Amino acid sequence: MQAKAKNKTKTIPKPKTDIKAFNDEEYYLRFQKHLDELKWLYTELYSNEWMFDELCKQMYQFYTERREDLKALDRKREADPDWYKKNDMLGVMLYVDNFADNLQGVKDKLDYIKESNINYVHLMPLLETPKGRSDGGYAVANFRKVQPELGTVEDLEEVAKACHDRDISVCMDFVMNHTSEDHEWAVRARRGEGEYMSRYFFYDNYTIPAQFEKTVPQVFPTTAPGNFTYLPELGHYVMTTFYPYQWDLNYRNPRVFNEMMYNFLFFANAGIDVIRIDAVPYIWKELGTNCRNLPRVHTIVRMMRMIGEIVCPGILLLGEVVMEPSKVVPYFGTLEKPECHMLYNVTTMATTWNSVATRDTRLLKNQMDVLASLPKDYVFLNYLRCHDDIGWGLDYPTLRWWGMEERPHKQYINDFFTGTVEGSFSRGELYNADPVTGDARFCGTTASMCGVEKAGFEQDEEQMEAAISRVLMLHAFMFTESGIPMLYSGDEVGQTNDYSYKDVPEKAPDSRYIHRGKFRWELVDDIKNEGSVSERIYHGLDKLEKIRSSEKVFMSNAVFYTLDTYEQSVICIVREYEDERLIGLFNFSEYNKIAWIDQQDGMYKDLVTGQEMRASGVWVPANGFFWLKREKGQEE
Image 1 (cartoon, rainbow, N blue to C red):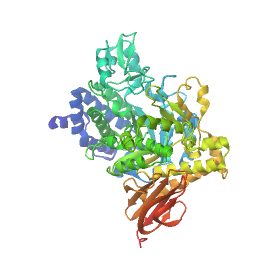
Image 2: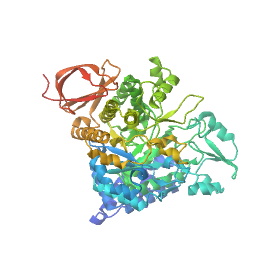
Image 3: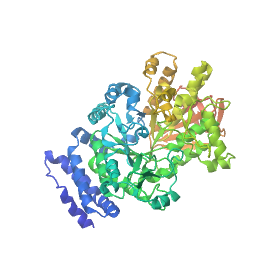
Image 4: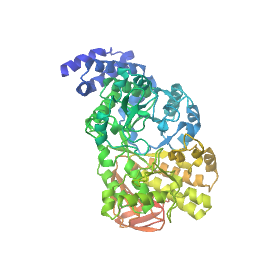
């Protein structure tokens, strides 16, 4: 097999070693490095050398079309493969239309983004989707076309280049699991064209779909019952895991894999630095399984990683895997055969808000201990809020051990964050509430969940002070986790819930639009007004961000562990890097609390206030935190 694999390199002729041919020689070496494994995985999966040859030729074609500035960036990142693990990384996720109307508007606002210490921008779904059936942009009708109201692919290239000029990386979503029913493939499949039907999962009777339904759980049982949709005009059932208008792609067909890889490389060549793979665990289906996290998924992601390292090695793969940290680890691959560069830290986000509602950090500490046990090479994307709702996928076996049952616990959390229980400071709305199971998810902005909306409505300055402290404490906690912190656009200025979505018919049924409102630029203007809510939050975050980017203890590969505080409301995280040590103390209660740690190894200085103290029996203010640092030479 190896001999044959080497012969296949003839499809990509080795270039001459002169100055003009340097890039080709560069490509040849990358290709040779991965050829044997890539061919073995591909042919073992598809048994189709002709399609593999086509893939190789197209990869080379995309490489030759790649701009020289992007190739230079590839070389720079190859020379510094840990470039995205540095302590100065800070991201923001935003909707183009909400933030600045269109792509050219985003380009005009890049100075604000840079001034906000951000060097990683995630442009939320912006490819062409059908009106009314877009799933927030995740039902893609054309993988090579931007939504017309947002601009063009050329505009996207301009934004990416302008970002690179400012040392800002660009991320975009790549929806691999499905297409919109309006995609050309789906349209032709609906006509009965066999070539295109084979790119999805079609069945002319319900026998096989019924077998799938026995083992495959429903993602959204209240809005999309079942995993198949019947098409009466065709007399067939088609697999639709998420919504009836999103048709699952069949990766058993090598044509699907090849074409999706060409789409991936197309956007890499447009200047995108981070490709966020949507719904990774779902992309391989097998009868008799739950169609989640199957081994072939890892084969596909591994091949995608190698294709990227051959054609555009400066690109990162970000996997959207919604599971607890210990279970998402396989998507990193191994050190010898890596898959995703980064993964979302979803469960910690939900557990953080659980701690806000319960004033109990025990479950959060368990999460931190799991993360601390993982290899330092693994990079997680950490966030407080994002474009989506919050699902309460908590560690219920542990909660049950502590005497808390799942259903009443979820009910309490949702009641707390919707503001319907005494002592709540939060405001927001439920999403996909199921009256039968009592299950529901939650929607709201960080500021509204922390009490800014309620305090502003009641014009209560004491409440507002507590709410702002809570916002800053939670961000400080997120900045202390290992990985890359991500802000959600508007959080940096304390933007609250937007209820105007109820007046728009196509948005009204979807409460997620409560935190997908238009960016309020008047809040940016308000930053100049000393003492305003926006000014206090923005400059509070600015200070934390600058401290983080200047202190080595926040490097992703720092030693990271927790200490017991013997106070349920306070969590302690320790970070150590070379000769420096940081103790982070975070109080999730509205009362002053003592963290009963006893680190008698000298004096510590709080990086935020400059206050010096011993890290022993520390009084942590209500809704407050400390970043206590000690350097070598300060011990007694």
